[in-house]
Length: 480
Image (tube, rainbow, N blue to C red; front, side, top):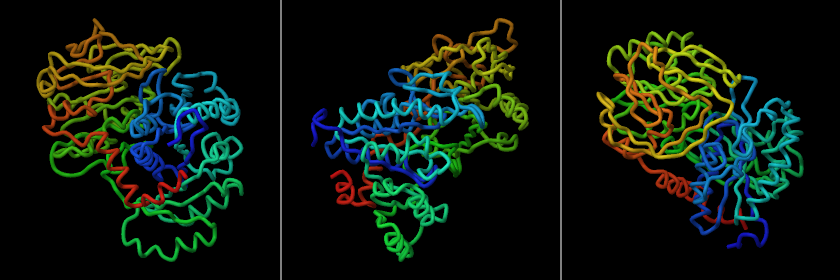
C-alpha cells in the first residue's frame, strides 16, 4: 500500500454514456472493494447536479458522494464534491461551492462559471491525492457532450489531468448499448480514448451468451475490452441519485405515497421504504393516486412556492385535505412542513413568497443565510398513529433557508413534538424539519415492525457484486 503523502494517489474514473447508466453505484461498490483491500480511498465528483444533499462539516455535499465516502470508510467532506448544482427551475440552479451557496457563481454563464471553478476543482483533487492511496473519480452525464467539451470540469478532461484509467459504463436495459459505447469513444479526443481502459455493461437481463459477437466486435473497433456485465439488480439498496425511483415498490400492505412535485429534494431519505416488508411505495402526482394511499408524505422541495403552485394545479390540495379529514396519517418534511403552514415570506428574495395550505398554525420566512445541522432528535408527546414514535430518538440533518414559528392567529391547532420548533403534530399530521427519519432502524421498527439492511451491509453487498461480475483480477489490475 502507498503511504499517504509519498506520491499522488492512483486514480480511477467511472464515466457513463448517459445519466443513470450506473456511475454512482459502480463508484460506491469500487470504493468499498478497494477500502476493504486495505487502501485509503476517497471518492471525488468535481461537479454534481442534484437536489439530494447531506450535511457535513463546512456545509453540504451531494448525497451520492457522501455515501461513497462512507463506503470508502472515509469521513465525508466538501472537497469530495467541490461543486454542487441544485436545480431550482429548468434554467436556473443554486450553486454550492465547497459546501456553501455562492450567488455570484450562480449569476455566471455556464462556460464562464466552469472556467472560474476549474482551478478549484484541480486543487481539491490534488489535495485528496496527496492524502490517500486511491481516488475514484465519478463523471457526470456523458463525456461526449460535444457542445460542452470546452467547459468540461468533471469528465475526461479531469481524467487527463489525473492520468486516471477510465471505465465507461452503459445501461444496456435502455437498448443501443454498443452504439452508446462506440459513439462515446468515437466522439472524445484521441488522448482521452487512451484513458478508456474498459467498457462495463450494466443492468443486463437475460442470457449473457447472446451478447456475442458484439463485445469482440466492439474491441476490434476501439481496442477497448468489455470488462464485465453487471446484471439488473433492483434491490441493491442505494438511493437513486437522479429523479424519483423508477418504480417505487409493489406488493400488498401499507400503501405509502410520496408526492413527487417537480423540485422534490432529498428524496433519497425514503429509499429504505422500498425494502420494507409489508410496505408498497408509490410516487403520487394525481388526486386519484393520493386517494389510494394509507400514508402520504410531503417531501422536501428546492422551491416551495413553485411546488405549491404545481400541487394546486394538479388538484392535490383538496385530496390532501380529504386525506387528513379522514384521519389518515400525513408526514411532511422540511419544505413539506412549510407547505402545511400559512404565509411564506421572503424579504431577501431567496425563494419567493406564497401561501401554504393552512393545515398547521405556522409562518415561514426565508433568510439568505442557509442552516446546516446534523444532530439527534427525540420525539415527545406524540399521539394517534404517530404515538409509536414517542420517546424514539433518531439521527438526522437540517438543510434549509426557511425559519418557521407558530402563528398566533392560525386557525389550526398543533403540538410541538421536537424541541425548538423542529417538529409539530396536529391530529394525523406530523411535520418535521429534520431529514433522515426512515434511515434509522429504531424508527422503522417502531412504525413498521421491521428494519432493513444497514448501509454497511449494503456496501458489502455492492463490493461482493462487482467482485463476482467483474472479477477480482480485473479489479486489482485497474489500479496497478
